[in-house]
Length: 218
Image 1 (cartoon, one colour):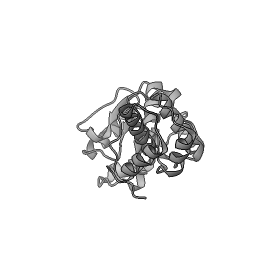
Image 2: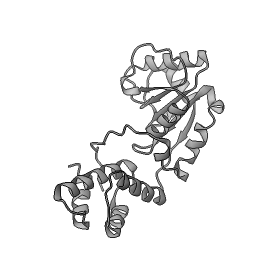
Image 3: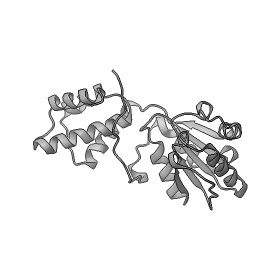
């Protein structure tokens, strides 16, 4: 089954109670609770899109009064006044900006949390000093989700939208959807829109149509 890029929905509310704990993210949660143990005061959370990295990053940032920086737009020289969290740390357009940020935070004793799709060893930065600092950081993977987590995620996503799915439709989705949280979020959004547009509950036929469009990138 081919997986293509999705028009992911923006999610602004990263409340700690909305995160789904599971064995696949247990190691990440344990490391986030112990910033004093991070190598050189840095931790890299990595894993596939939609695995919960950004959610955990925001939860940690809120709990630690950390500044959140979007890596994709990180430029210039920034000296953080406290803990800092960098999302999409593997997409920084100006590597020297990230290097300066890491150095400045280390000099002032501030912890830095980074989230990325790739582990430090596979990030493509050509700046040797930045590469060495990233590889020296503690890195922890958020592993692919288990069945129980996907079931829990589907329930939570539907509840958030007050979308009711029959057991046959739920089972169909759990069996056939690509096993990534990002696809689940997009599928539930499309099912919700379909239910609203048609003024009826989602049937297995409708779910199959949406799933086909989803995996075909439509």
